Image (tube, rainbow, N blue to C red; front, side):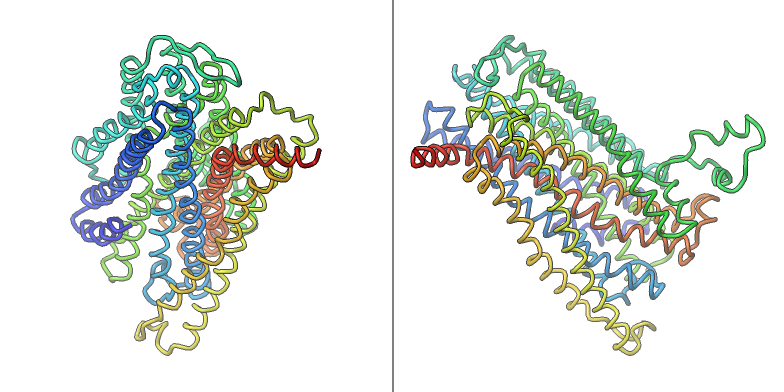
Length: 635
């Protein structure tokens, strides 16, 4: 957060020299978070394992079961970072947009708007701290899940330390690969024009994935024996080293697919060649060739932007439809990676597939943190009254950052699904459950209740943002109405009160959703048993992933549809604009509805499905003991 705050102003100043210089500052600053998180997480985990070894000695099963607390600690902090940060940033953002843009018709980040400072602070709290803690939780939990299963496999039984630490070796190679990949964006191929920004960021994902595939192959060849056994629900399954390599690789490439599908559904860079395609809405094509020239040109986001012609209602309808549709390919990618990795190496395969998806976390986080840094750079340019050219450059950086932030959320959700399933497998193994039979009433009830929890959690977080935004809107209106000269720019607004509203709301409002996530596994496990709890975990995973993807992509699409109209870069966009037009106001309303979806509810669901699973795993022995004591007492 500190580096991001320094980088905001520096990016704005560098934008005076050109878009390329500003891009390098924003990207390198984002890379700080990526490398800090990956390196810190790896180093602390390695030190913790060695310290615990002094106590546990040769009892590797007990050692790595205790290490699961590392994942629980990471996810517990991620819950507060994601939920609290999401409430903070969106309360300010919604309040600033509704009064500033829609009612007062002043530009975004205008210093006359009292909520603008809270909005800029919130970008760092939600997108830097929140996303960082979320992906750290995923990284810690996938490592812990893999280590737990490995400890009761031949690696742990035969005390093969190098093979045992294979998950950590994957992450180590990932840091080196991402370090090399970063040079492609900043040193080897310098960005010189606005239209090169987004391709440069996407190349980062492709290059890191290709290099990482080679890195995984080398590590698998050196660290793993040619044949070994993996624990699989009570039996030892024989696995070859090349099969484990494929498990990691399939997770890695599934992450890339999810990232690019997310990018397609949230970027406004596709379709509408030469600005003619909008004519399809108003005119009928007269011949086959004319029709072909208009076919396969509508991009999802520009479709949403076009729907703003008829008002906010159609914009909301199109946006929701886009979000639901965007779930299809990511779910198939996750399903295929689960099938392949489980077929080859059981639950250990799924855990290392999740690690494969997270192996390029340093690059992914650099791209993600780049978004809020360039967003705030634009805000600083506006507040400092800098030239229109500089604001255009920072807006171009921000538009690319918006899409890349959505890619980061796609990675986070995909990895959360695999991590949660790996933790679920570790929990089922630890709880001595050989099969989870959904036809058993206990399990089926747990399944239905678990599927309901993401909706309950989303309702809580959405209402929290709504309540905080309501207070923010009232405060911003009050200041505009009561402070003489504020609208004219001769008086200074009271920024501190708006910051306090967001701060108080984020601390107070995150308690109920946090309690829901933390208490559910304990209450279900103690009162209804581990079978019902296994149903709850499965249900929350299945429904949580779908809601998270659709919510994040819907919000991202609405945001970029608004930016597409504001930029007016094509003939089609200019027919919808300019700022302040009816279509633009409809787009702002869609963006405002989408803000809590993409930055609070959607990403926070990752934490719900992961934290419940890791908490169940950590407390599994206690839950089993409680159930056993209860059964004995009943008799």
